[in-house]
Length: 433
Ligand code: NDP
Figure 1 (spheres, rainbow, N blue to C red):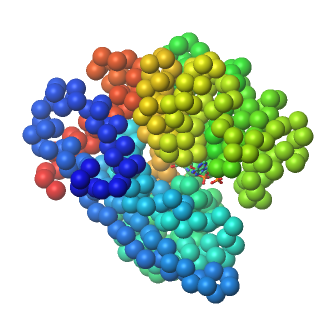
Figure 2 (cartoon, protein in one colour; figure 1 turned 90 degrees about the vertical axis):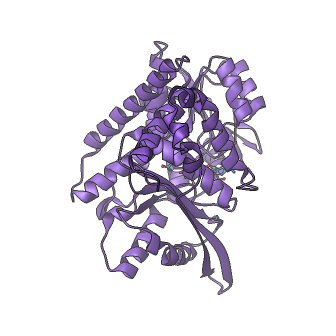
Figure 3 (cartoon, protein in one colour; figure 1 turned 180 degrees about the vertical axis):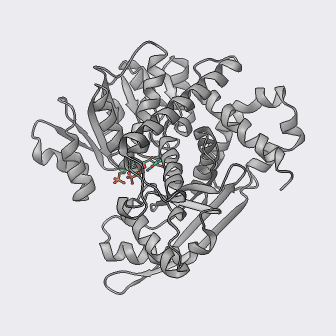
């Protein structure tokens, strides 16, 4: 904490991982001998830079850009870029740290990194977004490369932003290096299923957890927070598996539709028109919008927090348990506070932590890199099958490690241990670097 003052979210993420690792360190002293804990908590490289840009009126703005290249033991740094006004070093480091372990769980050859900016894209014109992305990439490009560091999207960064950044990278380097960014458009190196991957993967993970109790999504009432990329495709896959999502949200409030949310309307509002979730009620008078409301007050059997960090606290967890929630799958990164997590574990709720449950996105990014490297593009069915197999594999690895260390079904423990061992063993093999 003294070494990284003020980085609250980073401290939280590290503490959660370290809490799980005591039994592994006891069992395998080599990790202590090689000082792996100290090394793994220190990013290999941190880059902070100025991002100047002009708005449509000609006013000059200065934002701060970040890229934390955390760990390359398993492959090039890989992880998204977040554009949100709350971004500072502590957020990027928490996300980068989580990313190391998440990427290890996928079984793909990718290291961990994360980046972004405190730029707020809300209300900005297309031209302003483009100028910002170009300025951001004008500095970042020198740190990237398909063998070095491969960013993707996150909050505030979708296909449009990746497109502008890719264009600028290509222009500066004079290289059509498709594998330098993932989440690209389908006609220029993107992969089918990447858009859907995080949400679909999270639902597959929860489905595997339910199977251990001989249960499924069929007929379950679900709540999904957020209404961005992860939330939308979480809802889509829940619908495929026979569940019903009755509430979604954004940072202003939530909608409740007891018939089950109409996903095509949500897609139209969010993906095409870039509007707010409350506008859903303009079309469906039967649905209600609760301004400033807490989505976790809506009773459900499965909760999938898919908006942002620390959005579900102890009180919310108690309310969910009281209302009959049996499973939680974290689509977002660290959406449940440590106190909330404890409530779920004590109540025997199946709990899929983000680094396992939402790993489908980055896994499919790695599949996009594979397609780029072989100059190929795969079908939707084949790519989704690969994603599904990867999520089944992640669930299995987490479950097996939780059982080996005496707490079968504690997926937090399982995810942390399975991924740590993989990264730590690679670090030991590669020497003191
Ligand atoms: P989007 O920008 O597409 O959507 C984010 C959603 O979360 C929006 O509905 C947004 O509402 C809401 N939100 C953001 N910040 C807050 C906040 N402070 N309070 C309440 N709601 C908020 O992002 P994604 O869907 O891509 O990302 C969602 C989460 O999933 C993040 O934690 C991200 O790190 C994680 N994730 C994403 C992956 C991906 O592939 N995209 C992969 C793995 C994890 P509003 O519009 O009001 O801000």
